Length: 235
Image (cartoon, rainbow, N blue to C red; front, top):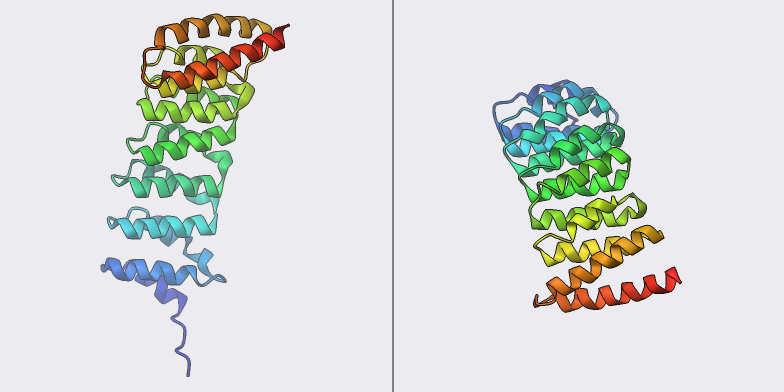
């Protein structure tokens, strides 16, 4: 004889149990009740403040599954949670529930101390591709460590014509040869003659000044190939 299902009202009561194991398991049980799990919205919102990390993450995952936009204002403050996995889960849940409301939260996460959270924000902003998102990314270039700058430049490069020309030119002066290489690749996407002439002059200076770097030969080869391609385009 099958075991009778636990009444949903009893499950809701267990969400406030002092034992974190019971709270965690109850969230999982509720999410298997597809017909009635939406009734747990308010209780799940309360659990976002749970001191136990795994309970908080389980509540975030449950709210993500529910997809109710009412959860977004409650998820936002979790971007200041002490543990990075919770901040990352909250950011992903906001993006999943309603990307149109995500922009201010992405701006906050862009400067997160965790590389995983910040990279997720960078990628999400680049995928939006809107003018405010591009502005947020380019402003972050001034504040990022080398790895972050390289990742931002990579994402901006994927936006094609949305890449600000002055940002790419400024990136040629960065100390990291990886950042300079990404700038070269980004600038190679610009095709108007005025930018081409400016870029060509800058590139000649850039290659001449940086040729002593142990890894610069790859940049020199790329630069020469790009210069030849511009010569063909401009004739």
